[in-house]
Image (cartoon, rainbow, N blue to C red; front, side, top):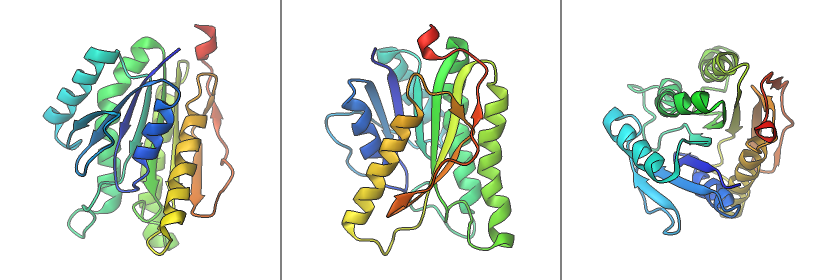
Length: 223
């Protein structure tokens, strides 16, 4: 059964690969992007997620055509907005908060949904224990808060983080994008029950899932 999938583009450059992976499964895919030229075959809507009016209009347009969002994948890092006046970690969490706040009520009403957040370790403030611990925990705390908020329903929330690949080759970046896409599809399978997982991806490989929680609610298969 086809699902309604909303993918939000961001700084990782992986969102197009993620959207294409769902499209190959014959899901209904909406692609929100702030800049650039998205693939013609996707249902594309230009949208600044930080603008509440734009976000509501874009999601409403998608819902009108395809119903409530079943799967949400957000590249939480925002392109070209990391500077001293706009800390990356705060921007990352705000971006995730905005889109989740708009789509989660529909998932909870339906009793099911899948959410995946994508963010760079750089954007999360990683580097040293002092500089990186709090910002990294900030986005993780959002995910885990949502896990507990949605407990008892078939809504899962997981996070994929990726290392900085500025020095990587084009092939390396493409490989990372495909890894992220494969993981996103895996984490949002109808029968998937893992939630609260944080999965770091490096350009050359993936690190196993860290201590996922288990939902207590029904799965898609039980509907």
